Image (cartoon, rainbow, N blue to C red; front, side):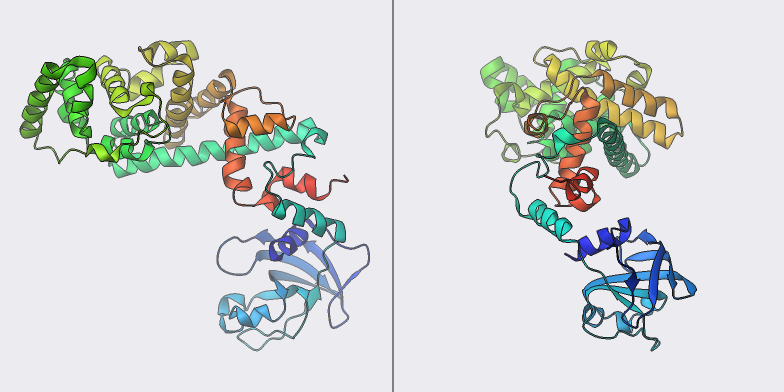
Length: 406
């Protein structure tokens, strides 16, 4: 409920009667301040009028005034610049570490707001605000979806840039890691990334012209050469083992992964790890996974041709573009301060069909229009960063629900 008090203060959802401090001074909120989600006072740089005096500083909010002491703020100099203490229940006076007694105001939660908030917190339905979705103003929906997509792109861009940093600025290695992770298609994403980080691309590049050697390299480091016996026979598997032993010794490679690290439960045969490694090997052999090729490709059709392989259907190619190419372009544009790549990334999402998963199906069932991958990426961000965290108070749909008259 304290979060709801923060929400009321931030949005100035106040009773019609005048606000008065516990000492009888009239209170006017000129500026609620900047919401602080880290350590320190809840709102920075607020501005309020107390009686005839305007004060600027920080505001702290608690369910009860006594929480000020329970949280140790009376001993913390970081709270000495607090100008106002707001509480749902004022049950004591509060002082800063310097001995200054703070003015306090009791902030009442409007009844309808409390009811709607409890509904959002209690329900197991997803989306929790589904009854209100059909009544939303399309312009508000569009605005929120744009903001969510921007959040999603920034988040995915940071992951790519973290990979670039961890490889000491090697964009090609970061590209290879990003592509490989997404070939895990969720279930095997982590082991695929660990595998990609173990591959010394400069060594593999010396044998790029031979698909057989690239396969031996990749499948050997994954510990999955034996998985090919049913498809290629014992003799071919023996040749791959022999070739991998040679490459492993030649380049002093680290120990390969164990086959137990790969997950097969509820996985279609087309998504089995050893099948995906053969596809990655083929793409690498063709030079498709080079960053330069991806940066040069400006349209979806050309990307589909680059990624065209047996076993990679159009839907899978779309997912690779959404989860690999788009974040790479956006991150590259961010890193090099070149908005052309960032705009191209967004344009690609707008041209691609939306993803089809349980998240998207549930939002469609609510009546929300989902036109492209840009929309589905925005809704995935909404689900993971807001709905799953019960963070309805930061969500614009949640904001509409709280004031929704059912």
